[in-house]
Amino acid sequence: MKKNGKLWVLGMLGLGAAAAGTALLYWKDPRRSSGQTFTLFHSLLIRKQDATARQLLADAVTLDGRTLSGDEFMRAYPLPRKASEIDSQPCPGAAGHWWIRMESRAYCFAPHGSAWRLHWVGDQPCGCR
Image 1 (tube, one colour):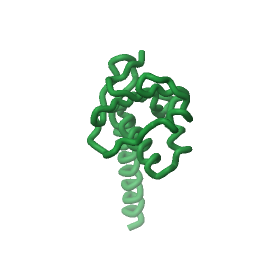
Image 2 (cartoon, one colour):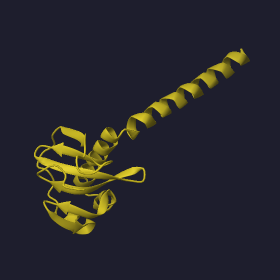
Image 3 (cartoon, one colour):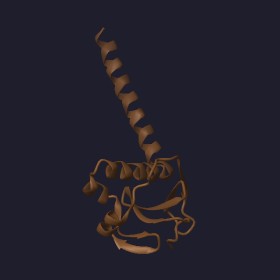
């Protein structure tokens, strides 16, 4: 009976490790992780957690053609009136960047370490180079 208990514990540990590995691969995919950052950014703004949302911005963010500091962007950025489905695609202007489209707005995210930072928002696909 002792041997069965040890095998059961080892089996559960193996199953947990496999699940963690699968989740890691799933969320490392740029399409999913940039989309998750987009959703997190807007959720934080809705909850009035501006300081935390600010951490998801690049040092300079282009908003409708104007380059703003992160703090200026936070003051000037209008929240979308309603949520909609988002579409995530590789940025045509810069390798490694991903842009999210929601309704008529495009949001470009650049990799920053293991995270993503918003650096461009406009009506057209990303103008970054």
